[in-house]
Amino acid sequence: MKQPIYEQIIEQIIVQVLNGKLKEGDQLPSIRKLASELKVSVITTKRAYEELERTGYVHTVLGKGTFIAFQDKENMKSRQLEIITRELERLVPECKRYNIGLNELQSLVQTIYEEEDGP
View 1 (cartoon, helix red, strand yellow):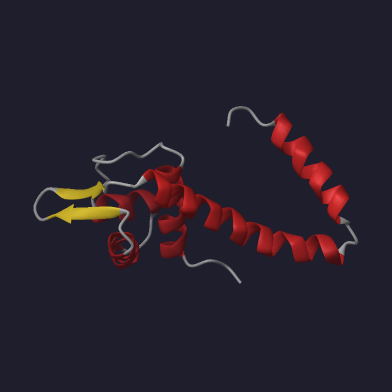
View 2 (spheres, rainbow, N blue to C red):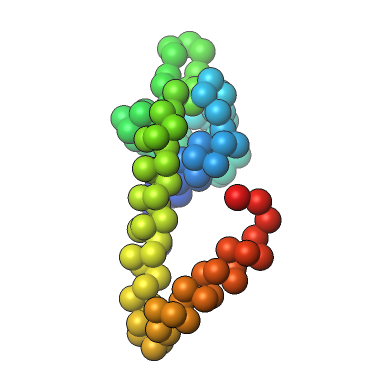
């Protein structure tokens, strides 16, 4: 099943917060501007921003815009691990279905990890 657009927006913003591309105080585009850029409805972007605010990733200042909220480093690490855990929970059953053993999977992860640039 395809992920709803508002969830894709949320996920992309959270990833940028967690990897440091968006920092505390950075201003997000207005709801209308983002909707126009992404060619989606204003309702879709509004829903994404509301969810991001509800979960503490952003805060909105009336008349000024939406900004990235303070992120506790320990909490950020926990959120990053949650994202990775969800991906592994999706991936591991696929590996089992294709008879890829744990050692083979670990070796593959190590190879990919070592090939990637940066942390």
